Length: 406
Image (tube, rainbow, N blue to C red; front, side, top):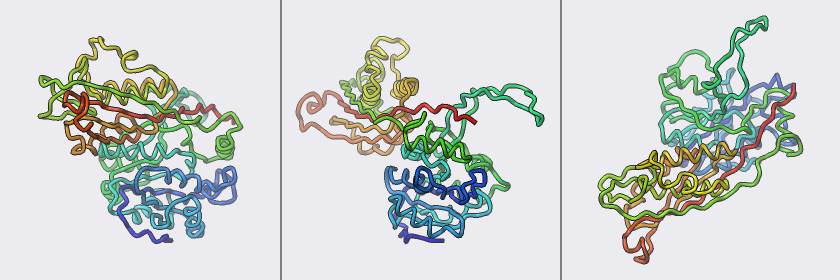
C-alpha cells in the first residue's frame, strides 16, 4: 500500500475509488483507469470530482500493483490533499478490490462511498446526494437513471421472447453509498461474487434505495464510450457539458398560531407554537420551493400551487418539495444545493439543525444547509409574531444524452 501519509484525522466520509481493472474491452494498452480522456488519465478526472464534495473526505484509490506510485502522484495532481489519500493494491476481482479498499478507510467515517474510476465524469453533486440519503435513511444508496429504451428478452439465437416492463427498471451508477460498519459486515459475511456493492449489501439483508443519477456518470468501457467522453469534455460534439448554474431566491413568512402544531423544515416540533397557513405554514419548505421555482423560471409557490386547493389543506412541506422537484425534473433541471436562513425568536433551530439538513437534503436530493438568526427585537419577527425564511438555490440543467452510434 502507498499511503500519502493520511493521519487518520476525522473524515466523516470515505470514498473508495476502484481503478484496478484491466480494461481489455477498451483496448488502450494500459489499465482502463489510466487511459487518457482528452489528455488526462481517467483516474485524474474521477478523483477531481471528489475535491468538489462537501466536508472532509478520506479517499482510498485501489489500483494494480505496478501502478501504486503512479496513482499516488495522480491523486495529488488531481487536487486531493496528501494527508487524506491512500493508494492500495487491488485484488483479482472488483469485489476483492473493494474489500482491500475497505481496509484503508477512515474508521471514524459514518459513510463510505464506492466509485468506479471508469465513471470519470460523474459530478460532485452526485457524491453529495448519495451521502445525504445514506445519512437520512441508513440504507445503501445507488444513483440511478430510469431506463428509457424498450427492453426485450431474447434467447441465445436472437429471437425475441417478450418485452420487459421498464417502469420498474433503473440503470445503476456509482458512487454507491453505505453506512460504513454495515458494509464491512456485509463483506465479511456474504459469499459469492456480486455485480456491484449494492447487490452484496442487499444479499446481507440490508435495504437499498436509489437517488437521482446523472447522465454524465456513464461508464467508459469501450472505444465508443471513450469517444463519447472526449466529446463531452471538448464540448464540441453532439454532447456538451451542462450550461452555467442558475440561482433563485425564495422568501416565506408565516404568523404564529397557538392552535396549530408546528411543522418546520418538513419536521414536527412537539410543544412549539405552530404557524398559520392554508397548508401547515412550513416557512422553510415553502421558501425552498420558491427558490427552486425561481431558479428554473417556473413561477412561484402561489402561482404554481395556489392558495385555495383543497387537496393542499394542511399539507406538509414534503408534499410541496416533492412536487417542486418533479416540476424541475420535467423541465430538465437538477438541484446543486440549497441554503436557508431562518429569522425567528423561536423555535431554536440550532437544536435540530443536523436533523433539518438531513431531512431536507433527502427531499431535495442535494445538500441543504440551514442557519438561523433573530432580528434584534425589530419588526414582525423581532416582536415574536412569526417566522421568516429566506432560501437560495442553485440548479443546473441536465444535459441531453443522445445515443452513441455503433
